[in-house]
Length: 532
Ligand code: BGC
Image 1 (cartoon, protein in one colour):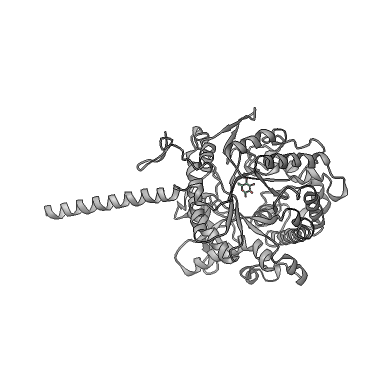
Image 2 (image 1 turned 120 degrees about the vertical axis):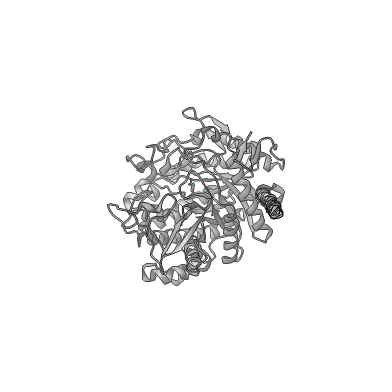
């Protein structure tokens, strides 16, 4: 009897030791990453977008954008805030560029506000003050060895175009966009080497025309109860117009501007990774479908000239058709894929089993997608357990391996086309201890572990050429206002003073290949992550 007890004790201790060392080594493996793990010339940067940081919403000739107008309607933004002042980057861009230089960034991704450059679209004049503003940013970045990485469309455009054409439901927006792109190429393509035509066509089409979170707030049941819209069809029409606008701008860039710097033009997409909820074959298929309905929806046309077969099978004639010329124009129209990756979600099949979640069903819980697309129900939870540590965004969980899986997926589907991680970032849950906002160990661990998995994907052969932290500084987080913070720098209200968080120090050390002292970050096996 005694012998058996001893045996049990020895084996329990043995398993405990093995368990602890596995946990420890997996943490070390996940966060042990150095700049030198990345290829020579790999760009390390940070990203922002015009409406989220610039402010100066009605200054120096800028017109009102769709977001300026949207934020003024009660209830559209949780804290009733807007981007009128935002981080006042419009007036403080020199200070912000100095911050970037001090961190050692080699790239800065930002967007050009359409309403600052062409306040009335094609109808009106070019606003030279707007052009000069971006010119100064570009020149000052280059002076400091920082590559400007420019997005042309990051969710906002002149409100006048929304009113004149009804926004992106109209194919007429394409000509407007191509003119805007031409003005930007003409003004900056002699200095800007990296261009992003659109930020997240997939997310924009869904948020604005399916789920009614972004202007113009259109949707239909079961996705939401809007005054007007058709959630089944309109996102498809909008994405179609955006893709064709991309194709026309890409053609123009290649014909007239690319040769100036031998620049690269690509697109970014919202890149959620999906994994099956269960080992069931139907859920595996559902995860594949979720990938097709999300990233491949807007990438397949730009690489192969048509929508994913998985979507065609389900949508049939609802999915718009590209003519032969359009298909030729679109295929191979990107030089790189921009990956905005934050999280991984579970996918559950809704063809062979019933998906109980609909708009009136509160049992779905936080982090679930209440209505389904492509007969897939997606959620961050399995049996009430989150897929990774929850964050400030209800649908974002910390799942570092998803970064590697995402890059593997894109590498395979698109024949290892060049890729840049154009956004990756972390926000603390809102109820978290406020002191963590500056002493943001969670953010450091997030970036370290996602970078470690990115490095693994690169070691396996993926052609990834850059990584941008979202975001350089806390900013206007769309419908979530200022409560959700992604920045390496804190923006103090109301002074707008920039203060580096611990993560800024970490990034700087990482970029100079030194390590933040072990006394600053440690892991306690009983209580989790600790800061000292
Ligand atoms: C957008 C950013 C946004 C970030 C965090 C991305 O989808 O491009 O503008 O701030 O997600 O929500």
